[in-house]
Length: 284
Image 1 (tube, rainbow, N blue to C red):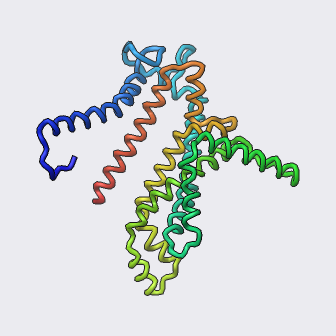
Image 2: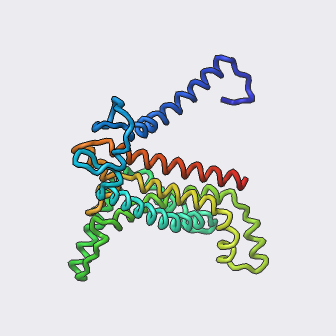
Image 3: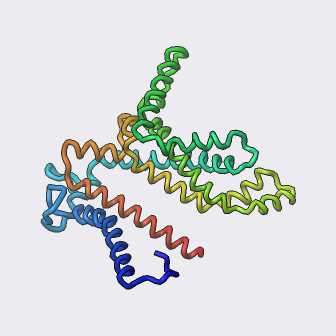
């Protein structure tokens, strides 16, 4: 809706109803899951049988809470580790790529930029299978010809990091690149006129300007890694990530502990968003 144009009362009312329904559609499922995490029931859905913390703290034969389930906690820890390394590597490589693609004299920039965007177009399942087949073939070839057993080329933690990094770096490149387009090149020229080297210009001028985008890109890469399933499931080793673990549990049996996990994730993301909003508002 364009606020500068005159609108009828019916149009305004319909617009408000649409916005309200849109946010209800987005938020209501999350609220339902969070509420059912405290339901005193052995089933994952309604009816409501009363308030209980069993699905967080219970340690009995009938009920095993989130914080008492070592396998579930291990999958959470694996996802946190995976997300951190994926975000770290993606932020470093993605930021460097964004800086390179802004160079005017960079040969083959169009072709390389197209290839950098390819992981966003390729389905995650195809990407996971292709990485698995390529790494398995490379590992077998190296072992047969050089006698080296490289464990990271077989389904393992580091292969998951490599697989998720392949598209995480692209997200970082796009986010940092969007911020970089607003950068005034006159600042770099002024620094160079004061005899600053190219590395000093990047470190003292460009990086501080890009810092908000770099931090945001790190968070985005972490969240994408933490929630990724379709690529990870082909590359995982003996220790599954949280999405893979939850999927395996849902296939055979589902308990409200899944709601408890969802509640913790929603709470963590909401608190992070609130803290980020407060910090940015204070800076403004």
